[in-house]
Every structure is written in structure tokens, then in C-alpha cells.
Length: 328
Ligand SMILES: C[S@@+](CC[C@H](N)C(=O)[O-])C[C@H]1O[C@@H](n2cnc3c(N)ncnc32)[C@H](O)[C@@H]1O
Image 1 (cartoon, rainbow, N blue to C red):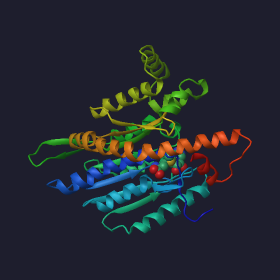
Image 2 (image 1 turned 90 degrees about the vertical axis):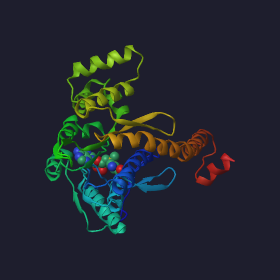
Image 3 (image 1 turned 45 degrees about the horizontal axis):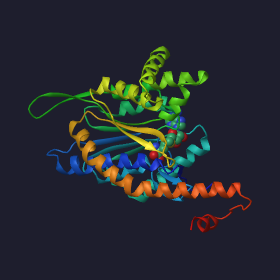
Image 4 (image 1 turned 90 degrees about the horizontal axis):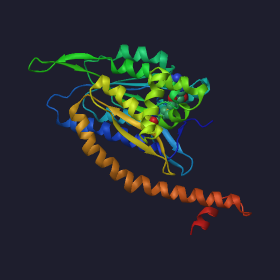
């Protein structure tokens, strides 16, 4: 086992990280540099993994949620807490994740102006400690990025969303604040599980709704020609809107084959954050997606197609150079 590990990721995962980075940059550039009184900022990354990602298919490495968050706080004028929970059922893997996180963080030479807390608990145990640590009167960002929908029951999302605090503005108005949330909504898994009897309990838990209720809503969407993934996204967005009073901003993550893999959601009460992300963030994301990501995705797809053809033909392509020869 290499000393410092990386989270194995498909190339489409980069979109999730670009979206997170775009929003946290708004904190640095707009809130941190332009607000008359800069508020403190805490980030809770509850599925932090190794800190950096690696795509085996094109040998590319990039920052995962933990390092993106650490860099945000490093560049933000009033950082408060970086909470990284990195858990695996396999103890050896968990230790490897922690060692790696510590190594990557040490490379960043973080200032002492904020605390870094690294834990290694299943979400159901970590959530209460994290919530106790977070004073809801001040801004906090929460990143919920599981591998499977079973790892993110709705009650976790709801507990965070309802962790509200009240503060007074300079003119004495009382304002209620809720945490900002990033959620990786695993729509393709949920769509699949919604049609398999012995997996439906995962959908019950993930949506936090009785089975008859979500089945009924899904069949209504189906009758209107709406696909399952979109329907699940609608149900989830609606649940969030019931608490936050607005719908989340959603980035549908597209696989290199053009399929939707999952949806990355951002929900914030801040009108300014919402507005800037919708306009500036979306614009930057689209530029990056169209010009950078899509081009590389096309190259990967072409390479894969050649690989498939080669494996069908009598000539077995063993080296990458074989694919490159074929692609000329
Ligand atoms: C998709 S990865 C997270 C990737 C990371 N956010 C990034 O951007 O690099 C999901 C992580 O959740 C962890 N995990 C699995 N089950 C969990 C649970 N019940 N509670 C907390 N974390 C869990 C996995 O070990 C894995 O590290």
C-alpha cells in the first residue's frame, strides 16, 4: 500500500469538485473581500475520504472535497473550523485515509487561525458531535458526499438543515440562519433501487418518506413523461424547499458516455450566495465544463471505444501506445 492514498474516482467526479470549488470561491472573493463585516466560516466535510482523487483511466489527480475546503479556509479572512470526518468500515483503509489527509494538509502549511478536527466515525455517530460543535448563529457549510444512498438517510440532512440559530443585524432585526448544504444526491442508484423490492427500504430512508407516498409521487411523474432520476431530484428538492423556503441549485453530473450519473445540490438561505452562484458560478462552471471537461471526456470515450474494438478483434492491445496508434 502506497504511503499516501487517493480516492479512486471516475472522470465525471471532477464536476462535483468544480462546483464545490466555484461556490467556496464566492465565499473567498465576495464575502471575504467585499463584505463590510466578514463573518466567520466553518466547513464540515462528513465524508472526507483521502483528500485527493485519482482517475485511473486518464491518470489525472485533483483535489477532493477535504482539500478544496482546506484551501478555501486558508484563503478566507475569518476561518473558524475545518471538520473532516473520514470513515471506512475497513480499519486499515480508515487509517490510510487519515494518514493521507494529514499528509496533504501538512503540504498546505495551513495557518493557525482555524482548528482542524479529523474524526473517523460512521455518519450516524459523527453527526451529533459535529452539530454540537457548530454554533448555528454563524455561517457553516456542510458537505455530504456518500458512495451509496444508504449512507445518507434523510434524517441526517434534516438534522443539519434544522440546526438553526438566530442573530441580530446592526439595526436590531432578528435573523434566523441555517447551515449551507452540499449534497451528492445519488439519483441513478435511487432510481434503480426504487424499482427493486428488496432495495426500496434504502429509498424510504434516503427520501425520509413512507413508501406509498414516494411511489405515488413517482408514478404521477411517470404519467407526465418525467424520467425517474428527474422525479427523484424533484421530490428531494421539494423536501429541501420545505425547510429552506427555496429550491436547491442542482448540477446534473454527466458521465463520459453522456448519461446522468448523479446530481450535486447546493442549498443556502443566503439570497446573495444563491444569486451569485446562479449567475457567476453557473457561468464559470459552464465555461469550464464546455471547454475543458467535455473535450477530455470525448478523448476518453474515443479511447475506450478503440479499446473495446481491440478486445473484440484478434489483435490484443496491451499497451496504451497501441490505442494511440489505432486512434491516429
Ligand atoms: C464518495 S467518497 C467521498 C469523497 C470525498 N468527498 C472527496 O471529494 O474526495 C465517500 C466516503 O464515505 C465514506 N463512508 C462510507 N460509509 C460511511 C458512513 N456510514 N459514514 C461516513 N462515511 C462513510 C467512504 O469510506 C468514503 O471515504
